[in-house]
Length: 405
Ligand code: LLP
Image 1 (cartoon, protein in one colour):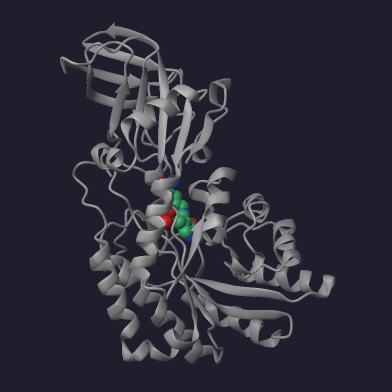
Image 2 (image 1 turned 90 degrees about the horizontal axis):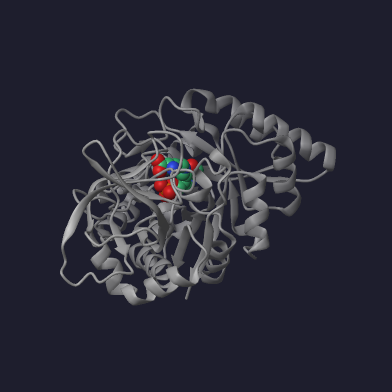
């Protein structure tokens, strides 16, 4: 979403007010945009697929509360995330737990509250669940996270194939043998796949759904189990940069409709609980990161704006978390001085950290009147922000987080 689109939903005046009222640097989350994104997903899925929120994208309690109010389920990746969504009031049966390294006490907590499914990612994990189930005399609802054999993965960030996630097809027989032999303890719910993140092509998302449905058919055929739920994972992308087109939702809706109507999948689609678990698509665009200008200075050929918040608060802006090239996010400045003449100047915007990596925007045009104590805003910062950043680096204060109605 570019800033004009953002301001067409939330007025710039409202943003300015919220920035002035907050104790920055930090994040502002706008409820209207979050809600609007959820509605867009629901429309796309036409009521046939349930939506779980991937908490790792933004575990802020304010966001989780809103997610809970809207009635979504949750994908959690740790005991901490599990506790946070329970605190936000999301019912246990609408929670699934995925992640390649679940600790014993996390598995135990998930079993104790009776979540919808622990999506098992290795034989060793399955054995631990079985042992816990015997020791505590408790059944466990489980899913199997499959890492499908696929050629080239078309996604921004690949999470299938030669990665640590899920169980590769070659290892499924022993996993299902253990499930079958312990069907009284391991209550098999269905399968889970998450192929990648930041997918902007509707056809790829639909194709990934087809891969999941084919896996479900194969699992039923090869191992004689009944698949009751299929979790297609997340991965729906957002357009951060000028050269990116947004995910085409009407196309996606049409493609998903086609896949789900295929005769080969009819039995599954009629009977299974179908789930998607996006994170970024739901919350990425509702969040702004803002920081104040501490110092303006010129060094060499560059004019620097040094902010009081940097990659310690928002690693994504500095190119963290798996990006190959750092690119500029949509940016705006709130100036105290008059901006009427519209004159701009080229700035390099940096954070306060003692590393040349702490560059938040390169060669950007900002008002010429920009002064110390003015504020710089960055758009599309609602996902993989604070919680995915090196918050402790240099012991600066933690970023504020505000939810704006
Ligand atoms: N489900 C599972 C099992 C996941 O591992 C993830 C994200 C999601 C759902 C949600 O994916 P989304 O809809 O947000 O794409 N910080 C990284 C992205 C990490 C994604 C991790 N897994 C980055 O921005 O490069």
